[in-house]
Length: 140
Image 1 (cartoon, rainbow, N blue to C red):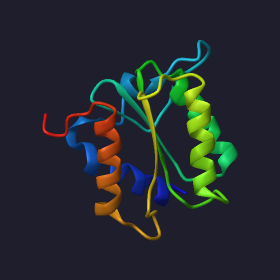
Image 2: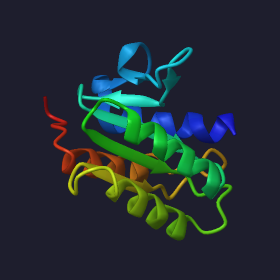
Image 3: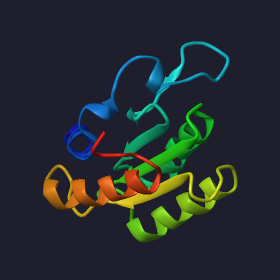
């Protein structure tokens, strides 16, 4: 699974450039007990990002981390690997996010590629478009 997640993070780096953060407090989720959970990234100081290639049930756990993250904007990037139907998984995540996050403050992107079949350019474009819908300025 590491290869798929690594590819997703490469896509995010390509889409967001230096605005993509992978470490430190921007990626921490404080659940109030023990060590904080960590998401896969943050962009522009206000967009929390999770990259997932797992089963639909596991992906929905990542949605909880996004909802609980302090940044107001949320981006879920799905790699079509272990979920039985990526389109349905994405829609389930949109419905769950919509219960807790304002419309226009979240995006769910299903990538065309993954670790075994990378499509970096195509996926970076769709990810950048989602980031821009969330207010990210790629030129800044």
